[in-house]
Amino acid sequence: MSSHYSANYPSYPSGYASYPSNAGYTGYAVSPLNSAWQLAKVGAVVGACGAGAQNLRRYQDQEVDPAVAITATLKASLAAGLAAGTAGLVGSQFRSSPTLSLLATLATGTAMMYALNHLTQPQAEKGTETSTEKSAGEQTA
Image (cartoon, rainbow, N blue to C red; front, side):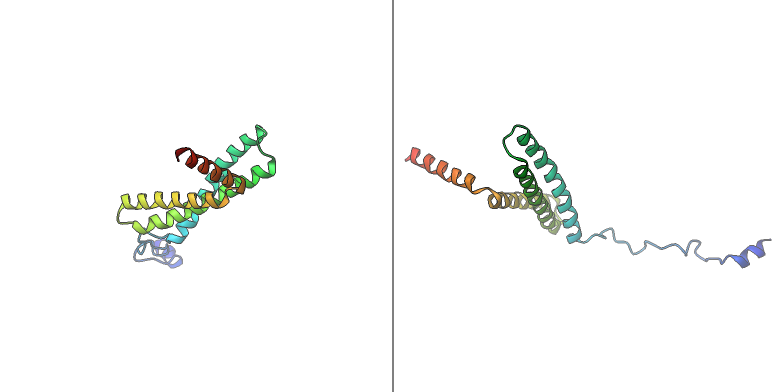
């Protein structure tokens, strides 16, 4: 009976040779750009959740109309996604030092959010800040 089954089923010398082997797996299968893209998507979702909650509250308090709330939420989501992706990409360049990687990630994320918030800030608010800074400068003079 055993000879009948061996004729129908091929034997493999290593046991499970028909299954793919992971012998060449190095543990780092994801490219840094793919990781940055994944971080950008997560950052955009987190940014949308935070800004959405904040703008929903502002809308309920009748501080803004729906179009302004949606636009502000989308801008914040985009900014958070860009900052997270960029920070992750920069941080991944310092794989040998976890502390340096963390510091580079925090510095890059902060710089990106600062720059993006400055670019997306409405002109009315920029004018208000400038006049406030001028009046503060006049008080100290």
